[in-house]
Image (cartoon, rainbow, N blue to C red; front, side, top):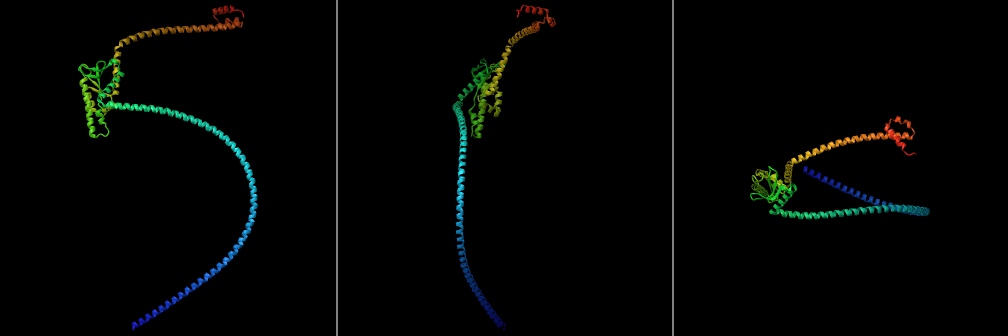
Length: 417
């Protein structure tokens, strides 16, 4: 029973749902139809309104065109009249402006011509000055170029000389000759001829480059030129390894020590030469290298009584030697100097006595001159009195009687005026 009731209710609900759906469809169809009718009505109304609007617009357009044509015609007439008036006014203005422009152009032309003449003169003057300065600069540049050419020639010559010097220093015998020549030049410039001897032969048969003859107790000092350059160059060669550099330093020290030993054994002879000798290095760089970085070599040379010198230090040594020799010669001539000073003292004493006598004579002459001037003034005053016929005032002047008598006689012997 309940199942039948449930089935009955379900059929009823389905029927109601179908009826409801049919009603909805009918309502939707009615809405769509009314919307279509309304849309068609709106379209017909719009077409009618559009036709009416077109007719009204065409009518208004024709009226506007007619009014526009009439206004344009009137405006054209007014514009023509204004244009003729404007043309006349413009013509008159153009004529006046043309005349004024012509006068302005004439004035401007005159002013421009004047300024152009002035500018032309200034430009010509500046151009002349510029040409003159340019010419002077050119002459100066040419002179400097000539100087540069000369300098270039000197540089080329110097380059040739440097190459020649390098070739010279590359050979051991040539280096020795170079050192001897430099040594001879220094000694000859600093010492007198009797104070040195070149290529002097010692009693042991050795020949020294230069022997200096100095005053006692120094005596004979041997100077020998040495130039250890090969290992020095190897030591300073760019790119050399540390091992090669150390090896070159040891070889350089060995070369210098061998030269020191040779000089000490050959040129220091007891009882003949002094107790020391000099080793001359012609290169300042080698001398500086030894004294700056090889003190053991310098100490070895001092132990051997050999003094290492460069051109600069040798000049100082020679200058000191010259001063010592000059002092010795001065001491030898001291008695002659004393005699000359004694004679000079006597002559000066005699000169002083004569100068005192001359001063006395000059003083006496000055007093005599003053007396003569006093007498002259008195005589002149007496002449003035006589010429003024005031002889009675002669005594009042306080003149000497002899002067008065001399004046009177001279006046009486004068020819009458």
